[in-house]
Image (cartoon, rainbow, N blue to C red; front, side, top):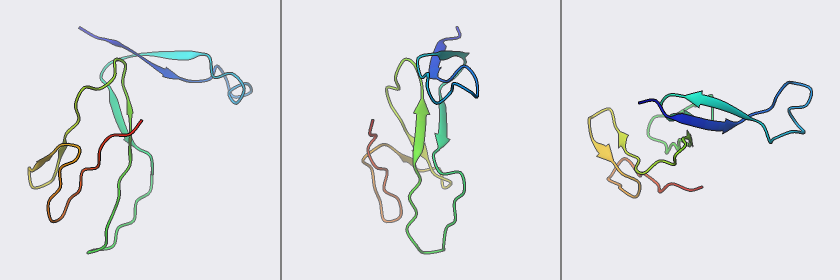
Length: 88
């Protein structure tokens, strides 16, 4: 069963800054996208990744799967990774 997700958008380029009341209907899965599009990392230095969730109904749980197949829930940490809690 496909669910309907709604994400705010604007009707066109001219009025997009002034009319936040319109919605784009979207079917499919929730999306997760990084808020920073270009990331530069230095080996051995801390790096913070920020993600934006778009889902309706709201998400109920979030997990991160690392390259080494470790699973992190918000609030988990080890010597290399800190999975911060979700903020609205």
